[in-house]
Amino acid sequence: MIKILRIVNRFNLGGPTYNATFLSAYLSEEFQTQLVGGKHEEHEGDSQFIPLNYGLQPQIIEEFQREINWKQDRKAIKIVRQLIRTYQPDIVHTHASKAGAIGRYAAYKEGVPVIVHTFHGHVFHSYFGAMKTWVYKVVERYLAKKSDAIIAISPIQKNELVNKYHIVNSEKVHVIPLGFDLNRFYENKEEKREIFRTQYVVTSDEIALGIIGRLTLIKNHEGFLKAVEIAAQKTSKKLVAFIIGDGELRAELEVQAALLRASCPNLRIIFTSWIKEIDTVLPGLDLIALSSWNEGTPVSLI
Picture 1: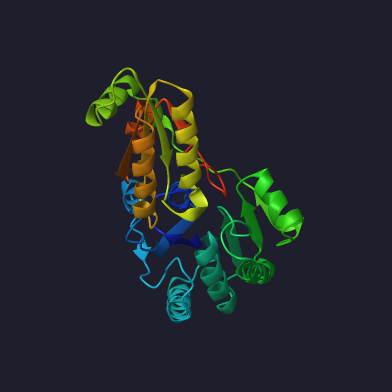
Picture 2: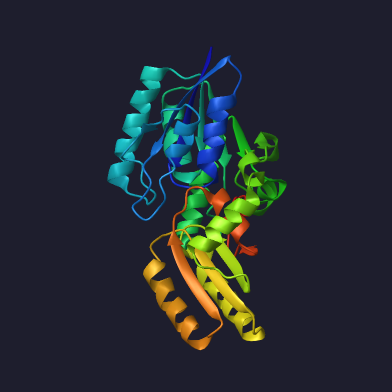
């Protein structure tokens, strides 16, 4: 039995949770996986239901936090190192930046035979200022040297990691696109459309637009709202813009939305917060948008 310790940043709604869940649940019987990760933050949707739905019981590490916090991060490294000593994995597979840093460092210090990391996105542009971005690049280059393999989720991402940002040598990088169970998105679409549009009182003569994701700078909801404003000004048709998700910018975006409503009488803007069963939402929309400055794989569009 080959034992894998799989570490994700935190169990918040998004692609990494699905990827880590499917890898943990569907590897062949010769593999045994223990899945661990941090809690979702207060403004994020909790995604622990995803592994639970597939018969997994993830272990939560409270010290895993999104932001850099040296005190908490040192505690998290200590916890992961102890977990490695107890579980004795043959492979440590980390997903995304914080888990990748803490997990790979701990695995290297504990002498784990194989260390693998998946980049679900990266923070090498549009996230931070020049100095902080440079620090992240230095850290990732160091960690890449300690890794036996790096997984990129698209050819474009591999090119960025290898040629644009010079994080890792090409030979170490393997492109493995994300896999998803899409069956539920093909089921009962007309019924789901009717339920969604009835719930939010969307009439037959209204065009429903939507964006899905954390309300944070990198997702560029401000750009989405500007595009919606331009659309509303160019047509007399009635538009309803759905902002699906939550985050630290919600109050700021609600102010922007209120100003748009006042200037565009044919526009409604609805904040829904998080909706876990997104297959019940998409049939009700006529158009879905993505305005992010930086994406690994655009899961909301898939």
